[in-house]
Image (cartoon, rainbow, N blue to C red; front, side, top):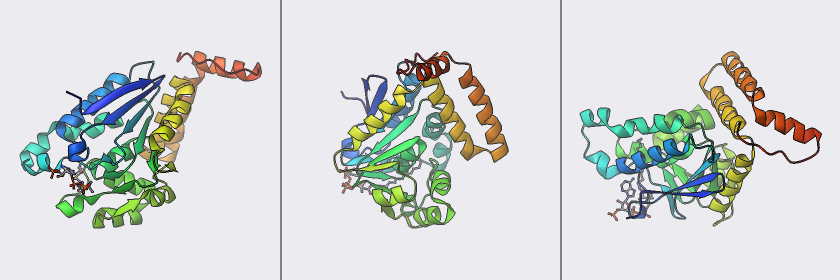
Length: 256
Ligand code: HXC
């Protein structure tokens, strides 16, 4: 039986594809567990330098699984293992790229937002429709949307549940790149390969430093960046990177 998350490796890039087409890739507890476990398995692997999370042409993910949520009591929701899913994704050190085609709604939009970059098909649709179900986003949507779009726009989308398209997402700074219909996965993989060509310790440190900008005050963020920079200075890869520049050749990074 095919898994709910299908993993393949392309050089130093891992591609994780959500595979529950009959439920529009709704994030069931089982799928969340599989995705988080797969990310945690790949994270320490030195051969994996960037991860792409993708759905299908029709849908990235239609949110948390409404059927399984509808049967959950308040007490069960408090203890549910799916609650730790978002913390587990946020703890991944490897750069993550969401490749979005079709719908990224509710928890699907939140999963894309939890990634470090988003490449979207021109026909992708984003939104946080939770309010129409009588709930609110619970996977980081209110916080990450507010940080990316600003309070007013985040408020509008969270309170109305309205969708927005890929071009709007790009204008608001949520999406890195909108690509021609059908090219979304190829372009996301190309971006991932570019990241994977960079020295892997430095890309992980850089990810941590940029995330620090969202989580800390400027002075603490600058201090954090300085420590991470000093760590990067201690790597063999930076010796190689600088030497290669001076010798006018391509660097060969070993992840040391
Ligand atoms: C469970 C879902 C689902 C979901 C779709 N399906 N989305 N099942 N949870 N989130 C199921 C449908 O019940 C249906 O099953 C099948 O997938 C096909 O769905 P259709 O609606 O017929 O498909 P389509 O017309 O293509 O519309 C696609 C869609 C729509 C626009 C994505 O399905 C939709 O609006 N889905 C719900 C989106 C949503 O509200 N997401 C927020 C969820 S709450 P059957 O058996 O009838 O074929 C959330 C909270 C996160 O995410 C909180 C943090 C954890």
